[in-house]
Amino acid sequence: MRAPSTWGGTQQLLERLRTAAPRPHLVFISSYHVHPYDAARPRPLLTSDPVAPTDAYAEHKIEAEAQVRSLERHTILRFSSILLDRKPDAETLRVLFGIPLETRFELVDPRDGAFAVARSLAVPEAVGQTWFIGGGERRQTTYRAFCQNLFDAQGLQMLPDEAFSTKPFIGDWLDTTESQMRLQYQRHGLDEYYLSQRRPAFVRGVVRVIAPIVRRIMLRHSEPWKARAAR
Image (cartoon, rainbow, N blue to C red; front, side, top):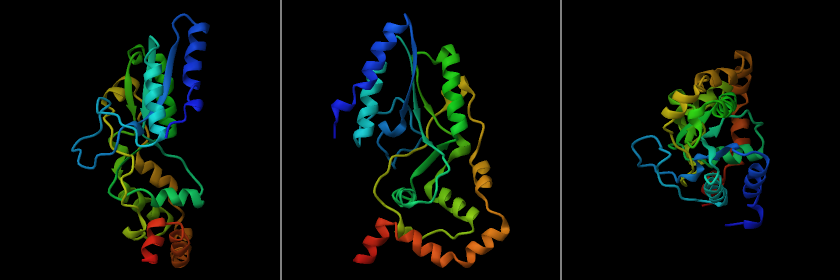
């Protein structure tokens, strides 16, 4: 899992910061990926909850966080998933089907995320803190509801449950109470995103006509669906 030869960048950056400035303030972008998913957790994830790597990415983030804390003035921001518009290519579809439908799902608008980073450099209370950066209650949903809304905006029906993975996936709702109180960055909700993705009525009508073809093309990229068909 570990690739130490590629992980020296954070340490080198810290050394150069200490040389360049007497009391530098570093904002480190981490991820909620450092926390394993717990479907039985009855509340949003807290930054104080245990961290445990499930892959090399999470292990890297955990080690980098520890290095960053050696700097007197630091802020660690653990981001939720960032909501980006992506082309429906093979890789996007592979990721689409790799998330269990009942996963708790929280997304942060990239504009809100960027604003949070900028604010954390300007707000004195951010120094020394580890905060979650997420979308807040207006962007907390389940993956099933997210897919249903997104497909509906395109004029498609929801794909069968069997097309989606049942293996645990990183994701959760986050307690962003403190970060939002200090940074005031959560401005864009999921309803706004769904509306931006909604195609004109004419286009949605055309999509409904060709929906069986679109469905077959999409399901070709679902590993769970292919495995089911092979049994």
